[in-house]
Image 1 (tube, rainbow, N blue to C red):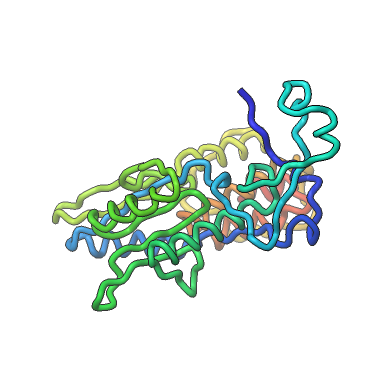
Image 2 (cartoon, rainbow, N blue to C red):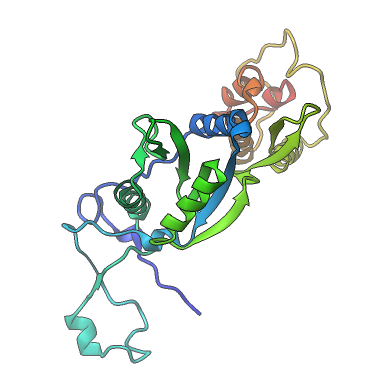
Length: 289
């Protein structure tokens, strides 16, 4: 079994493609959507998730920009074409393929066109990855939050099922049910003593990875403290022995990702200390974090 993909590394911007960046939904949109589902739980709102299968293979090329490609290697040897046909002809692609630099933005345009034209959804002017249905009295009855091939559906169960039926007319999907995991965050549905539903988010795996990375860099186990960092301790340039830059920056990236997703309280002390020393990381910076 094998698959064929485009050689994106030979594509030239301005010749083979113009845009490559594809928008993704913001954390603010995700938090707002989750908050609305919890707030409107008495109206039977919930959050479910679907995955669009082989998303990039569903991307459509723009009609005014046909795409041609050389024959894949092995076509002559396998007997599909002759050597003369390989030299004289090429293939015209009708759909996008994996490997293309512009595939992500082409898929988003394809999905946006279907949601707005065929499913009559409205695209948000604030977040282009947020789509919604409104009722006759101008109330939002369903929201779809798109992050590449992952789609969060927020609304009543009946409206969510209607959305799934409509989108399956164009795309194959995997129904993942009620929200459990999205972008590395695990969500646990709980009920308080008053019977109200609330959601708890966690990133235990990422937290363990951060601790493990930290211990590998400094060569000793971490200790729990009540305050993030040491009070009245100031960092100085080139303080302490240098540490491995790649591992250090990798750890900084994980801490910042955790901060943006679930832990905004990390923004002040820990992230400020580790990020400002990422150019030339030293042991003194780590030991004071």
